[in-house]
Image (cartoon, rainbow, N blue to C red; front, side, top):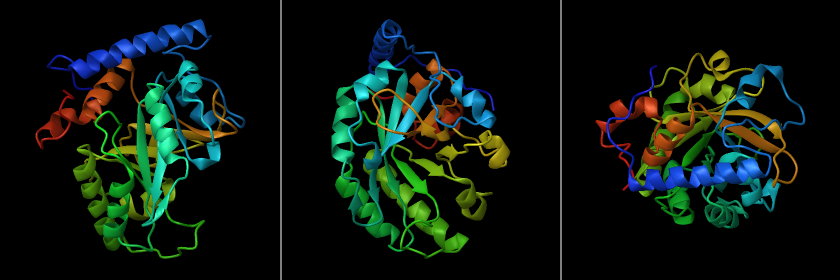
Length: 279
């Protein structure tokens, strides 16, 4: 799909973001990093995802396991964004979420919150919990709905496709109402195969694929973010961390920051009232 060209000027927020990115680039160059250089850092690299390491807009996702993340140090090393665990189910909040939320903001790093959906509580309960714990912050990235089977939890419920999609759509609509931004869907190969494959959703997709490129594992599902390793090494982050990449270049990234939408989808989505430029 061709990348849509901009037909209107950047907003003031976009211009401010551009200024911040240029400043970050200068700081990164001074410290040996760089805005446009990929960051090789993986304890167990896989050749199938080599392309991800050469792409310019790199990011991470974190939860309590990473403990005290030094966001300024990570940003100085070339990390452009972070997704952080916020909530799970109807009553769990990551103990480091509030601290990560504030520290990433103070470091000038674009950040978004994700909710891990469980299948043993209702979508209404989970939506209410997410909205009560995650601030509606216009400067944040769109919220993320993490869709996986709960294989490593005490919840063994597996809804059928119709039931799962009803809950998913409820959550997505609630998250969009709360934040004013079209949520991102994170998923893995198993859940996508069982539930999401063949389903049209207007949302941006963030796909996990640690041994091959996403198109090889998700039947060409369009993606905006790609989680390409769980054994990443990043300055400022203790231990191993998931590493991710944005699909496009710096101009695409600025457009995403300004609208909350994949630039390739903006023409279609703006007709629905979404993807408006930040004021």
